[in-house]
Image (tube, rainbow, N blue to C red; front, side, top):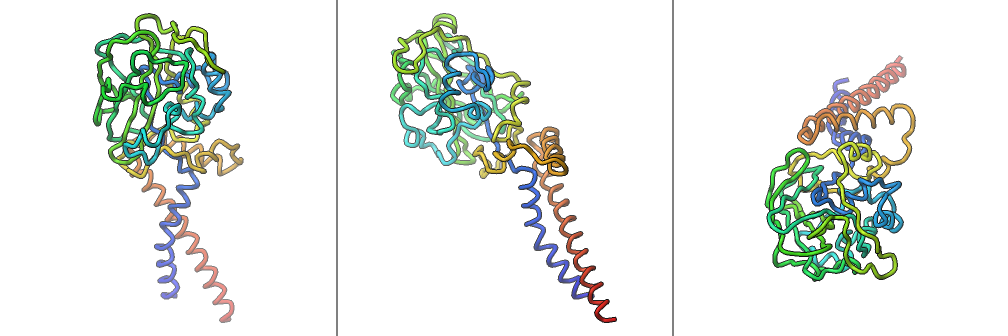
Amino acid sequence: MPSRRKVATIAALGATPLALTALTALVGAPAFAHGSTGDPVSRVSQCYAEGPESPKSDACKAAVAAGGTQALYDWNGIRIGDAGGRHRELIPDGKLCSANNEEFKGLDLARSDWPATSVSSGSNTFKYRVTAPHKGTFKVYLTKAGYDPAKPLAWDDLDLKHPVATAKDPVAAGGFYTFSGTLPERSGKQLLYAIWQRSDSPEAFYSCSDVTFGGSAGTGSGSGSGTGSGTSAAPTASAPSEEQIEDGTDKSTVEHGGHGDDDASTSAKPTAEAAAANEPKAAGNTEKLAEESEQNLAETGGDSSTPYIAVGGAAALALGAATLFASVRRRAAATGRRGR
């Protein structure tokens, strides 16, 4: 009997990491997305605010027709996991707004009627809607004078030598990183390109925000020539509300709750487990566990990763120990019967 207990103890200790891994996979192990420019609002955020299934503006309708609705539900996941500052090397001309990501290709459409935010030259406050804070540097670039929104956006369209805003390790408050910058003299329709390069990981995030200088945001510019180009006046842009963000999280392939840690291995890359979360869940314990997991993430917020892992580890250990104990008892009982 002592030898059996010794074997059971060793087996339980060895099985604990595997059990913890299995538990993590069971509750979804979603990837963590990070954010997008909230003011001036990004294209993807604007289209999400309009409603992925029934967007109102012609530009957002075209974006959905080109790339589907999932890109809008994944609004905070336009990223490159191994960017490491190599933005221009990894993103070709014409694909800046999608960061060369096929899922977000609808955002690269060359149109003059993308919903725009009205801005003026001079000091400006930028707000970046963040769902998972990390250390890193934000750089925001403005298109050069003469920019034509009806043509595909190229790196040479941006004034890369003079970013309009640079912020290193800003503090997130109320769901936003807020930092200041200065907009130069421009006129008509322009575009702001934001890059958030993490310093705790090579991962970087990208967003395009359409803006209008010297008039109302509804005043478009550019000829709108070319197949699929918009020619109507651009509507005023508006960011999604907190309620809209909350309502769409169950349809996203990336986690929106945030984790608030400095784990360099955490990224917004959609995982198979996260994608599977969009499939109809089986009735019974699996659905209940998923609901409890989502509730736990919502209640604990970004600073609770350690207690969450501890609870999961304890549950896995208890499950493994109970299984092994039952197995040992069955074997002992069988041995006893054979002895008799």
